[in-house]
Amino acid sequence: MKKKRKKYIYSEEQLAQKKIYHAKWRLENKEAQKIYQAKWNKKNPDYIPPCEIENPNYRKEQSKKFQEANPDYIPPCRIENPDYDKEYKRSHNLGYWVVYLIHNYNGLGDTYCGQTQNIYNRMLKHKSDGRLNSDKYELIKQCETLEDSLDFEAYMHEQGYHGRQGKTEGK
Image 1 (cartoon, rainbow, N blue to C red):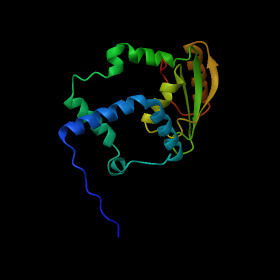
Image 2: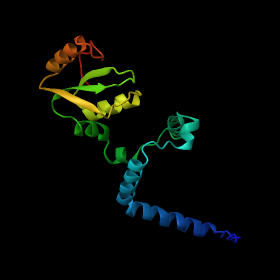
Image 3: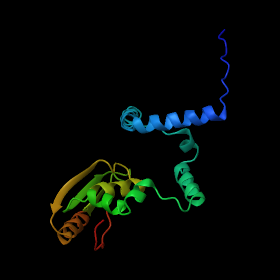
Image 4: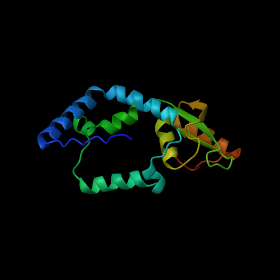
């Protein structure tokens, strides 16, 4: 039979020192942690945290609670650079328009056709809408102007591909 270890009781000062030590360690090892997390995520692609199994909207609810409790909170990236969002979006902008396909986007075998100038953000939007296979898209045409991409997209919709029509601006 194994002996149980006694729990060590820390003083408040020791707890504060421990928190400082761990905070410094996290800052110094940020890149190593990202690499470790990425490897773990690749090994466990189907992992769903227990809190999300019980409640699929857990993260959204936690985020909403935090925003309600901290209405004046500004993330550090926005304090350092107020135009962070605009620059981030521009950083993924291709500079030209693309028409893309997502095969079996709804789980019924249908193929979605769309156009965008920022494929990265567009696929994130599809993913947040609950679309399947949004990370397995296929680029079918590159266009210099919005009008060309809209015309080609409309042609693809006439051929039977799913998607939104009547949009006059891209995303």
